Image (cartoon, rainbow, N blue to C red; front, side, top):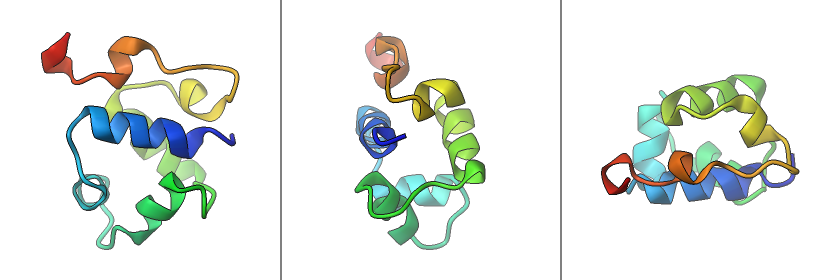
Length: 81
């Protein structure tokens, strides 16, 4: 799960969100946890992985497995497809 932060960053940026906006959307009052996970300073909890997967409509498998990439459609802004 070494690429989770990279994938989170890709999803967040492709949807035009700041770290603060994403944290708020996921129910966090502070954005530091989300930022730390994105920068690989902290490991995500199972609950966080599930929230991210549901929010961005991607599978937890695609987020957690390093040998799997996000589908192009999942990582792009839906308005651009």
